[in-house]
Image (cartoon, rainbow over all chains, first blue to last red; front, side):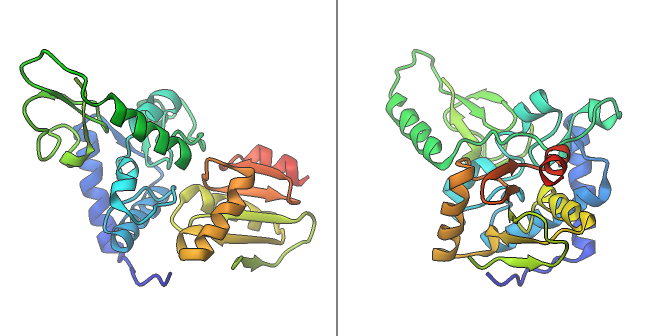
Length: 172
Length: 92
């Protein structure tokens, strides 16, 4: 694959400033190692150019958006990884403990299921569909940050973490 | 497979499955280069079609989760992720 997506330093700097501001406003922290962090952000911008979506730079994207929704940054695994390992899989987002230097950042295990397991999970969810709820409205859950809302359809953009409607799942 | 070769001291057979965009993959490459070792690597994200499938199948043998970086030493020992102490130990 020829890599014609050269990203300028200015683009990376702008992205960094914007993301850092957003992260801090919503209780998240970017890795303080600015060089490492900017390398990751450059890679996300490269992936946006390559695939049309900002796939996780540390995972192999398929090029098919619907198969990779779970790994569009911020990925579905960021928050559980922050809870269990104090960092996301890439080391882009870190916990307060790492930010304050109380813990050290390290490479963590992959939480995303293997391609075979992802297929099984998808089929299991399909067979669960149709569970009748007595609530007046369905409850939608943002798979990235856990935000819940009871309304006919999920919001266009998550009001908490700003990911798109396609990242919501029917919760109840 | 269309891998890249890096010259250095020839001790073990070292092969790295990596992504060109991944920070931890870069750290493994930097470690190998600081150690001055000869190794081969492949950026799976830069491959397409049959070439990518072939590399993925090869990786699946030692790491069914298909995660990166995966370092294979002498075609048998497999180290997943940037685990400096494990890598150093295996290459001693």
